[in-house]
Amino acid sequence: MIKLPSSDYKSRIILLLHFFFIVLVIILFRIFALQIVNNNYYRKLAEKNIIKVETLAQNRGEFLDRNGKLLAGNIPDYILEVYPYLLEDKEEAIRFLARVSQTNEKEIEKKLNAAKSLYKPVFLKRHLSQREISRIVESFTNMPGISVVRKPMRQYKYAKMTSLVLGFTGEVTESELANEKNLKEGDIVGKCGLEKEYERYLRGTAGVQYIEVDAKGREIGIFNQIQSRQPEPGDEIRLTIDIDLQKTADSLLSDYSNASVVAINPLNGDVLVLFSKPDFDPNLLIRGISSEGLKTIMLTQNSSFWNRATMSIYPPGSVFKIIVAAIGLETKLLKPTTVMNPCRGILRIGNKNYFCWKKHGLLNTYDAIVQSCDIFFYQTGLKIGFSNLNKGIRKLGFFRKTNIDLPEEKAGFFPDEHWYKNRFNINSPTRGMIANLSIGQGEVLVTPLEVCSFFAGIANNGYIIEPHLVDEIRDIHGNTRLIPKTKSRKIPLSQENIKFLKNAMLGVVNDKKGTGILAKLSNIRVAGKTGTAENPHGNDHAWFVGFAPFEKPEICVVVMVENAGHGGAVAAPIAREIIRKALIPLRETQKKVMPKQPQRDNP
Image (tube, rainbow, N blue to C red; front, top):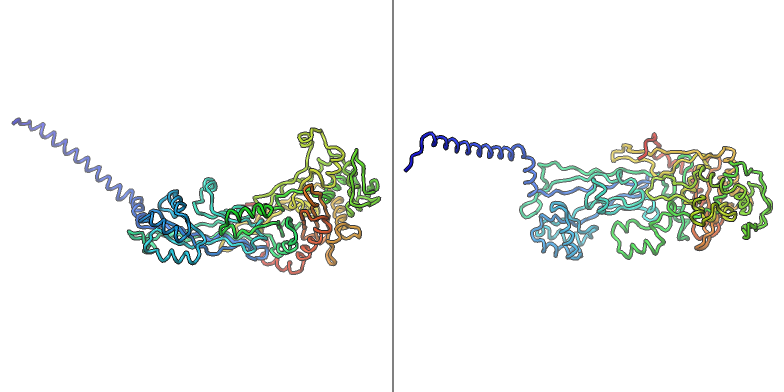
């Protein structure tokens, strides 16, 4: 046996002690890290094994009309959801879920497999019936991880008649999730209309509570060691819309399939009516609709999702004569007393005849507007010339979006030289084309909204107040969150010319030979202009734009009825009844329900 020197033995003992000491320090450091430094992290991991995190859905903000009448609110909905990590027997659970929800097993399995997190609920079915709820609740004790939750669901009180203003809501899509960090799977968001435009105000904030569960996933009760957060409802939005006027428009257009009405207060830009037909029932979309039902809405009913007031563009017909007259007056190529060659019902331009709807004889500018003489305005357009006409149009800013607070709006169209070059390979339109443009036909196209906004500016002595649908936004405590600031612009017309145009429009409705006489009211002076726009695809479109009272206008109305015939016969009486309804004394009392607040910045 070899005996080691005592010095070597001691060295090895010391080395071994150092090794054990280092290991002990590492272990102690690790224990310290686990127990002290990372205590919260590992405690939360442990709690996930016994706690179910439940989202508390918030109420979406309500829509009210200008007089405080509820337009869109919330009702309870019951939803079937599953927490994948709590399922004991996945296959048995899928069979049970398929049976009680009448859903295909493969579809359920696909949803469970696609879940991004085992700890977050997977939504399987909304709008459960009482029978379905009873069957599910009876099996709760045997099926951990499956639950029925109550959540708010949007309900539109006036459904169809406000559908193209308010829009509708739906479950968030993958693309929306990718673009918005604050959204999560299963959230409900606005899809179009004001629901989409003011989503950030309407959404609110979801709450959360922690439910303690046992080893089998059965709920024991609220886990109070972690504080729950209550949901915060979305903001209340009061609109400028008058639902009674909206109902009036709906009733007056009951015999027509395609039409729109816009009414604006010229003094402040409040949109009192924004109605489009055909419409749709957004409640059907929210509750779920078959592919065939959706196809019917989109195709059979003439594109019901299309807001004709803000998105459809039409030839304006004789309504456009006011614009042509305005340009002629401003360029001094036309005067109120100007007389053209007499109207004999036909005018030869080049090798083509251009017709008028009547033989008017000799007229001055005032009479030509009142009687809507095409022959007079053919000659007026040719006298002004396309260059001046085009420059005047751009200067007036007629063919532009109004910037109404809706996500869907189109601008009108007026061709320039480049358009004619690209389309017909000509440097400028022919004389016949110019004549056609001068009576609102041919390539000129407008939306009912931009017509109403511009003529509201004429009624307001040349100042266009940007039209808006939202009057005020308040939180759940009644605090004002937003009052949209109204913008205005001056129409570049002299006050003398504006006065003449207003008086001519007064004559359209009140003179014996006026084309808009069916818009006349006995106790309120109404001014307006009729339009009958030729339609290459069918019968003429009927237009009327009017405002009242003439002395200090409170409402400007545009009625546009597709394929209905003459504007004076069809659209003018509809506008008359809307004006009558709007200007009753009760309306002044209703305005006091919510007083106007100081203006604030735009959203």
